[in-house]
Image (cartoon, rainbow, N blue to C red; front, side, top):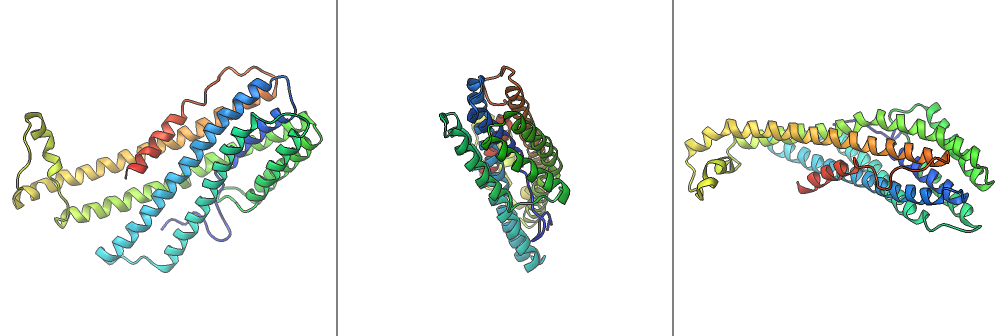
Length: 313
């Protein structure tokens, strides 16, 4: 069982989406001359945060499947699934659920930012920031030290005060510091997400191999490549033929496991690139530079492709 969180240590992936959210809110709330760009940035951030939410939800699906695999392993192979590990799984999924909700909230709030206007806008954004600050207070990171956590919280507090006082430069400085810290944090945590996924494919692959060896699987699908071109269908498969197909079935398990791991690695890289790209775009808007792009980062598509793959099984 992977121990990537405990009662004292939790994960903190969604922090980077907060950076994007707050910068977009700052630009719209202060009514800067680049309001069109700010609105576009908010819309793009909403799509990016939605991808982040989907990413975390897919990880939860993987954890749920892993939990079932441990139960099956215990029943079929007598490998114990201890109460300690069951509780760890429960805690891990609870932490991940927080991140799904946070990312979902980010996406919704970002989509609403383009409608903010008038003298109450700054107060509205500040209220949203305070709400998110409260939610962040329930999280910690397995990779961040206490000092790093304090820096992030201080930057967020500075941002709230700066927006309330309409101090654009101070707010931009605070968000810049927050963004840099959170970018590094997300990258550090990617290995934790990787351990969750690779643990799943390892356990699933081992159990699938066990079932193949015990003649509990239908391997006839391996013969379709020879029959389909000629419009033929498979008839009864003899025991000898089933035995001959076992090595091919095991090779397929290995190949599929590797493909799943590779797809996840690409999705994590794409999510990182998407968040980094949005950070760069919004930083440019904060500096009164024109936004060159009007579409969300293209790398989001790679994240959603992996999400769809996870949902398919």
